[in-house]
Length: 325
Image (cartoon, rainbow, N blue to C red; front, side):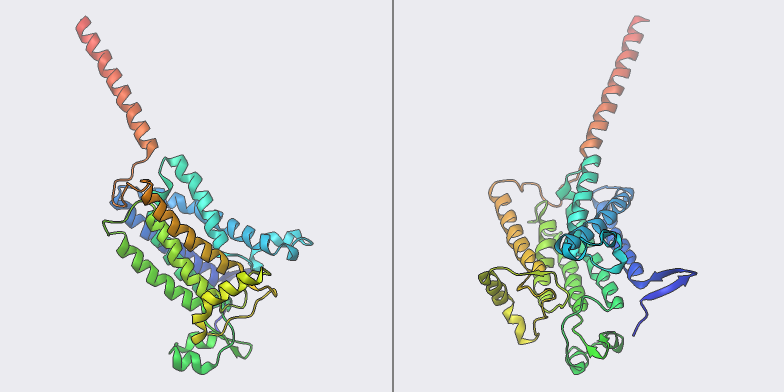
């Protein structure tokens, strides 16, 4: 089994989970900076955005998890702040990041969807790399499997197979399935953003569609999902959609005894919502701007107009002065 602690500095333990998440954020940042240069957006903009987005994502991820598991925290409020004990949710992280970056982009005068389009591949590659932090912690895995399935069917290397051996039982590497799905999605988004038919905002919407489709099917094999007891028709509907996976995988047990997983239901709603949004925006004429069109900050335009007016006023004074002489 691999050690979760990378190194120690006295009483301070630096864990692989944090290193991997930091690496994920930096790789996503580099992708955004590279694409931003095509639109003449300076790298400092994205670096500052990272300083806003990461804390917002962490706060959102924790609030989302605690909200759905309030019964575990209501009698021990200090535990809410002990994030190192585990308990964060990726959808909460996305919600938090979106809220934080929206305010930042508003302050900078940029259209949210235009910048979100640029960030989409970086977000997805960040998630693809970040899942390996779950691997190091032996978490976010699926249900039990035979060792032969990992070695002979999936042909996984020894270091993954051995890490999936938790207290003598082998488990589905759900983190790996999601990581691979996300990496493929990054390549798809990079290809898609060069297509002339792409409109502003649709890269961001497609990111949500791609990730949510993968999350819906992968979530079904996990054993640590947030779940609830919903109406029988809803549980049957979700199970029916997931049923093709049963050809290869067994569904994971419901952690809290419910019959519907929050992440699966949310994934379905996001896919439907994003598809409808794309169609309606095009039908209503709200998607006239293309992805490749220039991105301009309204703050920069206002600043340039003020400078232009000041220059014209100054030149006018000089002209009147010369006429007087």
